[in-house]
Image (cartoon, rainbow, N blue to C red):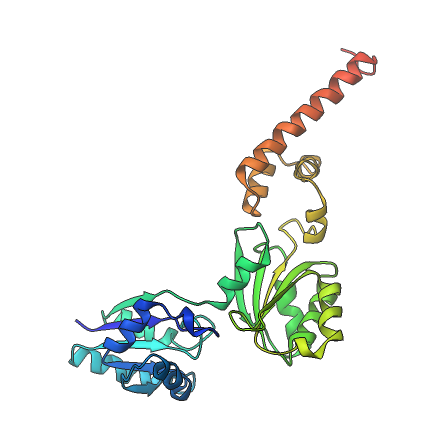
Length: 297
């Protein structure tokens, strides 16, 4: 039975190519590469001589049909790789994978380097829910519309950007979400890897003041407003007790308020502890009012 392997390749550091990935790249009958020149350098570094063919965004539709026909006619083990990272994640590959599934060909993902996963781990946000947007539109109007559409969605938005467009993206974020918190990672896994975290205004100022930082590929992890339209920067400043109290004042039940905080990524134990503290505060206020005779039957 033919098998299509989706093999993640290093995003900068060759040591990140797993032993399993090395073995399969050497054992496969064919490797489909986004750019054969880039992949050939990788294979040469590990002494791998498996035949290469190109499969990129401009030829993927036709190439997918050819490859699937060959895999149905012969028992083949074929690996799909992109220039860096995990195939079919903001990179070519989805059409081939879909065609393989449709043809009943086994698809196996070989996990490995992923720029957005690395950036998320380095960002330091406690939220568990996020949306991956890849590259946003280039035109300013469409870019700001894309940013606006994130409002009320997942608490984190993950974006890719190139070095010559990262400043316009940061300026657009500042315009749409002033004061928001974000983390910007560049040159992940490479010698000059760097992650800058802070308010968008501070991050923008730092990159604008140093052209040397505008190199490599960028991954941005941004906190976005919650479903109620409260800015993430304000949410960060509020205690969990304060957020619960604010939700109760808005008509939500305590159970609903607690559930929302958990959906926003706060730990269940922390939310529960905050609810107990809020109850204690409310009880103390009530007792104090009764003692002072401010409440009557």
